[in-house]
Image (tube, rainbow, N blue to C red; front, side):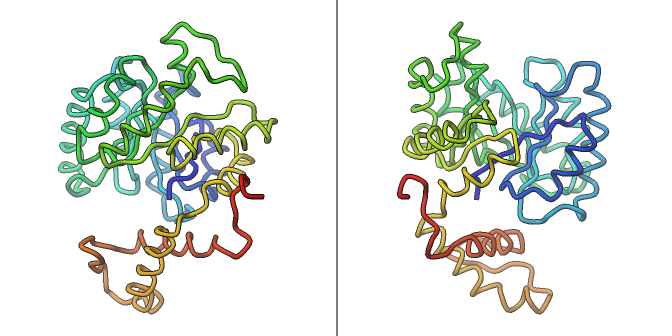
Length: 297
């Protein structure tokens, strides 16, 4: 499930530590916007150390790192510092075209081989934040087997377009926001909507998230733990997700509960392992008769 992606400043040991118990679906340690230039090196070290201690993490979320952009001059240093076992993938900001993803994927492949991680294990999430990125969103989403999600970055998009952000407005970015989930779906991946900046405005968050769901997004980026529950309540699992989770529990449940050596099973042509089992349990644990999105309350 990818209902919430919470950005955690990579230069704060306190925030990194508290994120280990997060209820978000995706925890994303940040090396970009929240980290000043002079602290990026120490942030890489803190994040790298945290990833090496993933046994201490709550094991129901996926762990990503947002690097700096391709054009920043820091991207490949970031990747070298954070690519290791324990990380699910990386979020790449301000992706403009598919050639960037191809180069990034090749670089990650070399690191996976050198560090004995596996083949095509690390995921890549392009963040669409520029006019050129919006135009090329489909080819970016389709560019590589590593791409499993795309993210919309509204504020950098508006900056690139020389437009002002108007809270509770949206006409300034409505085309880009509507296009990205369509392109993602056509490419066979999912899309996560941009952040809601005003953490004190829960009604604004709820309304903005309901709109995101109506546009086809599967989740939302967030910047504060208080935003997790409202967003989760809107992005309740679909009937198909619940049925899929039940299949996984039925197939893997006995072996997982007995801690047998069964590593994976094949369900509907897909290999399912312990990670899928944990996510399936999370889905079913969050489902009850009163689970309805805010739009139905």
